[in-house]
Amino acid sequence: MTSEAIIQSLASGLLMGLIYGLVAAGLALIFGLMDVVNFAHGEFLMTSMYAAFGLFLAFALDPLASAPFVAAAMFVFGAVIYLGLVRFAMSASANAGMVQIFATFGLAIVMRGLAQLLFTPDYRSIPHSWLGGKTLHVGGIFLPAPQLAGAFVSLAAFGALWLVINKTDFGRALEATREDAGAVALVGIDKKRIFALGWGLGGALVGLAGAVLATFFYIYPDVGASFALVAYVTVALGGFGSVFGAFAAGILVGVVEAGTAFILPASLKYLGIYALYLIVVVVRPRGLFGSL
Amino acid sequence: MLATHDLSTSYGGLIALSNASIEVKAGEIVCVAGANGAGKSTLLKSIVGMERPSSGTVEFLGERIDGLAPHLVTQRGIAYVPENRRLFPRLSVVDNLRLGSYLFRNDADREAPMATVMRLFPRLGERLEQRAETLSGGEQQMLAISRALMTRPKLLMLDEPSQGIMPKLVDEIFVAVSAIREAGTTVLIVEQRLTECLEIADRAYVLQTGRVTMSGTAAEIAGNAEVRKAYLGL
Image (cartoon, rainbow over all chains, first blue to last red; front, side, top):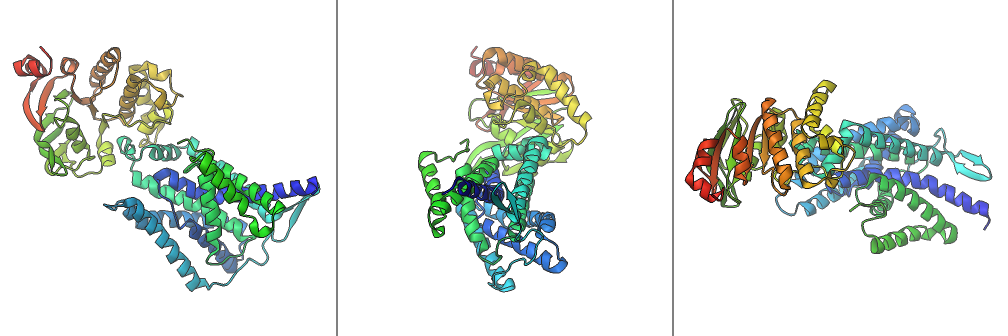
């Protein structure tokens, strides 16, 4: 075990962690905004990956170039899911919490089924993207170019998100709704509009993540499941509903995963993450960065 | 400006407000007095649409507003400061204020009311970057009133602004309410503390177990023997 191998492992973990953070951002945003866990989050990611794949087939657009379009489409998709499904689930007269869970869980099953029907369960990949297979060689360590680009997209997305939340009227309304959704009407804000935009923003973030992943990961109907599991752990670690907590937790998850794979057989690479998760749940149930 | 006609609201069979008819004319301060549970808060909530009245109507500027969603009532020009204030606790004072003017797109519409509230409550100006939750009860009430004023309302409705506040600040708040009316905003206050409220009000109503049992000028109500005994402790 050379120090170089350790640095290599840390660097790969860091890149992947930034992408995990981006995958989890939308989930954290929506949960923080309205206490709804989107159990179809993984399927949102799967849909985004297929969208990037489709744009590649149709227009030979590289996923990095189509990422803004995928994000825009997923913004609309997220808002439509809120307006057409979640809104009604939230206004259920009894057991609204359970109804929400079943509504998004059911949505996940439907989306997965549709993907199998439309795209078959075959594994797809984008054969020759701009960065596919390329690596950057920096001071003795190798950085895969697609992951590096994904990490930069993640940083840019979180930077933009920070600006939106802290510097715009919409961001302020988002924070206010998250604090007390019942009170925003007092200043004339329609909370349902903010909820719809929140779902849109969450969809756009996962859309970016999907486009990034499409450059180096297989695309198949169940692809969302494993990423979603990591995303739930990331959100829980970061502190439920904290978007920037998810960012930090994502990095941590990536590094721990890489570290575990470094020490243990690759098949056990999730062991470290779940062990970390268990420890945090026991020692600090509100998450590492949660404020509640 | 505002009129409720036979407004009734109940919570799961329990009648909180029964055939309440009140009127607020432009430029007035109207005080609605009553003990705990008399239906004062329910009256305000029913006006802004946070409670659905079972019967009766609410008219504002000649148009029916009962049945409108609360944010639309705010947009029509009624700013409501609820009993528990409902500030955004982890946002700064200035962000709470800015949210008040969320609906305005140009700076002039935002700066004018900001200047007004800074003049009314200078102590908020010293705490602009503090989180709302770190303010004292009185300061939070000032912030809640200020946030409401940022929406540039035609009618300001206050639910027990004196509650949980030290006496010195209560006076400050009532002085400010007078100034708000002088500046052209009509005010409807619901209060348990009648003395202060009647001092600044033009007219008053008394609510008892959900019904309007008395109405008149502030002086008439203040002089009424029953009111003096029941609410003023005289």
